Length: 302
Length: 226
Image (tube, each protein chain N blue to C red):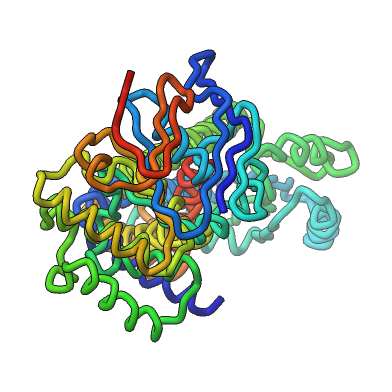
């Protein structure tokens, strides 16, 4: 058994080396497919962070009437905190709202002067609520509409922003669905192209396979080297493609940043380098080995 | 050793062999003569089990060839060596590796392979071409390598299907001499050919086929067609 395995591996490498023209073309196709695969992973990451940054900007704020005491607001806060839809709640007291306001407008003398002339704090205390999912703001808003709470509330920001929030939610879910469809279609196409390339490579070897059969080689000995070759294609292609994607990302990274300021694609790339590489290795090796296995099968019939 | 019992073979209604019935004993040298399309190659393919008969039974010793399962075929084929008109060498392997492959297929140890391959190449006279690839070899050299491959694991029978069809007269005789030598060493030879001169000079048993039927089977036969 050991002799067979070592012979299979030896001939896998030998075939790869002697079939060099065919090997190079197959690897080029596979590299292209893996770059597509790679781009899809990165694309998923980019849309996810774009969506995330939009989602983080959406919130719902309830402004309380000045007569409401802090205790009442805090009890409402803890009641809200029990809702399953709520992710975070920040309480902003009247004093804090004032100092935030002052800090924001510290260079605007007219506003600061106007504030001083009023003498009292005109701002209201508020609760800033973030939902776990953007589609849940409606439910939170209707909860705030409940008379036991709404009696303390002056305004809720949701009512003002509702149409924008709804539209954003729609855009986000469309991007998600579209991204998924594109990913599936492109990944499938890349897989089929590679599969077909390997099939053609083995088709050109069909005489070799039939000769091996006539000489009395077992199916394992006949097929094994081709599977090893497929695995070698996968490994080499994975390594080449990841080192092609690196400068590519480096080049597009500044353009992406103008759209999504917080996105650092290079640090994502290096942070996930091993994961990306192993994804590609797994994808490449399985695809290479499986394609060879299926393609040779056809010529082992007699 | 080989026994064809009333074998017929049709290809999509076309009759290739009709009620063919013969026996070959161990260590015989038998020629199968006939025009192209008479059924010579069909007999070879039935023996190597590349094709199955439409009717009848084929025995190799006590193995019923037409009933061998696909998975058992490789083991059966290790008992027979085959030589073809178009050589059928593995083009990505050197001469030595081609010969070695037959031994590797049968699971020989590397140590034995390293010993046997040079011997076989030497016997057929292409020892100095061991590291050449098939495309670097002449037709005569290719066929010698193919013979080395066919005989290297000492099969009980060597089947040669028009082995000289692509060769010049000089190489033709060299190949025939090699087959005779292998036969003298105890291996059964089945030679399918349409070459009149070869058959007439061999003075061995000749089975003559015409349109898929045996029309003559003589111990010291000549090439005679109706």
